[in-house]
Length: 387
Image (cartoon, rainbow, N blue to C red; front, side):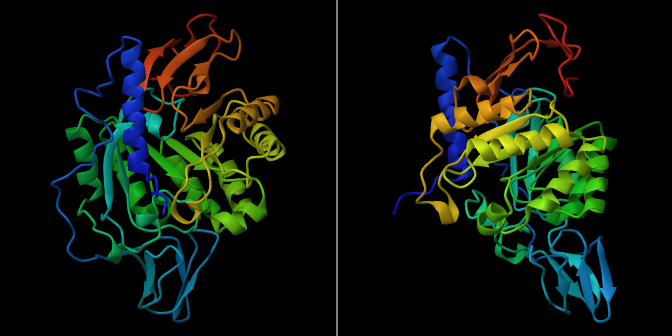
């Protein structure tokens, strides 16, 4: 059986390739804030022996049942039942989170790994994730965490204050809720973001956007950055491959964009499923019209994983055609990711066309020609958060 490429292996391979490319050009491999490999996991931390329950928000009691109103599934739960996300349950007519303060994954990496390109280039982040997800993506690269409950993963014992203190201790400038689906641990994520803000750190929410509008609005006002996966642009793709619906994600994108958060969008191109020029054009036109032509779109290369291990990676020419379709549809900043060394991993000024940020994959910013939010060469304002 063909070996699955998991996220961490891919990141380590990319880092090695990026370092080789830098060395070939006489540039030292990146070192983040005096640390070594920024993808390394944090170790020697306290583990939670048993799952601890914390009362959740976003629910209502209906008779002996509770209805979760966090995401579009609106799970109706009998006493003792667990929701679709695997981590929210009814106990005596109250909804509880089984993952508050109990992340199962921690890592250090640069913000570019989000991928997030128009916010604080090169800063070091502490990333956290818990078990659980409210979607069922057949190509999930983190399925060992996302498709299991809190009683099936090994979890750390970390309060929001402990998470932020860990970020400070490791010279990080931001905390990122990512890897699985932070929607399912929204209460924990928002408390982490509030503590980060109190101590002068940034906060980032990386999500698939399958969420009700009210919590999405609160998250957008709480976090500095919201990066949303728009996984495809047809209900058929969402139903068959993602295990959800498209419309709620579009509504979440519009809601997030109206908040104070900076928004970027990611689409993973799965060969023969959501990678046609027509679909990418329609998706990009929607972003330009309903959000803004200035919203960055990251088109990512698919690699076989989980239940789609027998499918091939996205061909390079398909990635290039998709980027061209997105730009022709009106988007100014379209990137290609998971393909180290391609020219579309850099930022170019939409006016003078000069390269203003040079990257090596997601792991190094080797040149930044944005000064006070403007192109150094022609003075054009570049949308983003630059300082």
